[in-house]
Image (cartoon, rainbow, N blue to C red; front, side, top):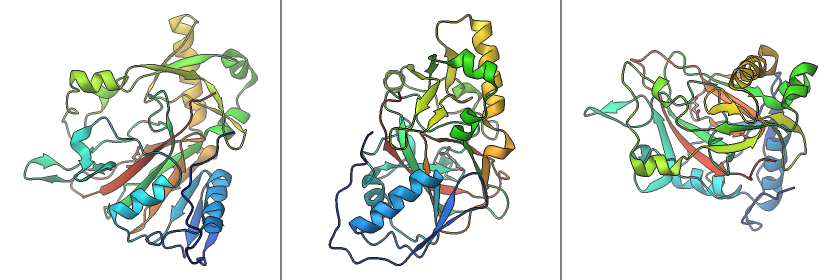
Length: 297
Ligand code: SIN
């Protein structure tokens, strides 16, 4: 099992905070923790364990700077820099901007991120351990994010599907649905040859074992998974469509309605997520950091 990389802050004062699980298949909120302050080792361990136990943590009321978001994210591992460099925060490339705000005719961030169910960066050899998404500006209506437990999905999979995917591997590609990702009638920016070289297709097991908890979960998603290897194409299409339908069943889902200054931290090794979208005229602006994980096994 892999250990999370932590630079210890043992001299920091302990903080009083509570972790309250949601009445949902996953997720918990963390109340009273101030992430602008360094966490001491024992507070960090509590957060780390809560993240493993609940899959998603909602840190309330985090009025923190980009540097503070980056510093907290780094306690869990190396940060990944998104291939769409035009949407990285100036001076802080570790922050990927998800935003529908356009200023002087220029989009400030990626407007349609998360329109299909996915696990962040599953198209990389080393997909993401987890992502932190912080609300900077929220719409008055809509803008929810949905999360589905892929461990519950695997555990409740019909026997014929479990058998069909046993020992199988699937290909993931960043470009799989890139051209379907149209926002307000506008296509995503065309990828340059250098960007395409950064996101070559990769292969991962269809079922992955969580490197820290040992729990098994599905690891395919409708955004990036293109096909299952070593079986006929029509069979692969059929199995994937059954897996995608099963993986987002309502009983595996927690739907997050954002509150001002929420910062979410989810486990991409255990969950998939989806951005529900909001009316186009309402501004939604978020900062995401993405922590690198292990090669799935
Ligand atoms: C994402 O897929 O990381 C974005 C989710 C969101 O904007 O709600």
